[in-house]
Length: 225
Image (tube, rainbow, N blue to C red):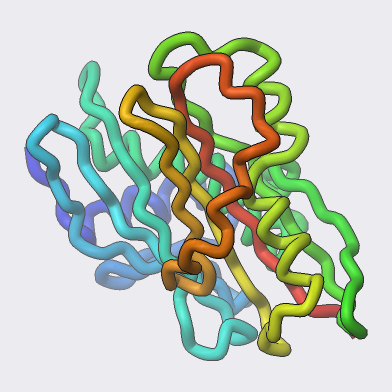
């Protein structure tokens, strides 16, 4: 059974309203959280040859200057649940908590993120870090998972951004995907929806990597006066 963007938006609105007591409602392919300024956009799911589904999901708020913070959630087929629903569930519990903690502090999903003050180059901000999402392709240990949770690559990126990079005076979001595969390492950094280039290729170098696997994590930087 296929699921389109509007159907997925309706499912997300019900999840947020019934499961997390948020005043969420769907209009077309967008979800509005009434009275908060938070909007969530769903783009058309993209089926892959291996049965996986990529689901583009974006979060917006007036402080974002009209932009959406986009992610490509991945859903895995299995059981009776559509892979797009699997992608949505994973996104709701690993990505959305970053935005909930910053913009919807009364929401229970906010508890899945952590907030830390950060200062540098005459800038002050509060950084919201989300939980890491890991996949074990063979051989990852508890030490690997602990290191990924304690210091995810996204944290390295955010800390380095405060050592001299020119940042806009508005919220900044970033996420990283780092993996160790039999073919070699993979490092991807997405900053304000764009590829951040090769300057962050070292951000997973501190992880022990006893086996093959991946780690993905999100952060949202909110400027403070």
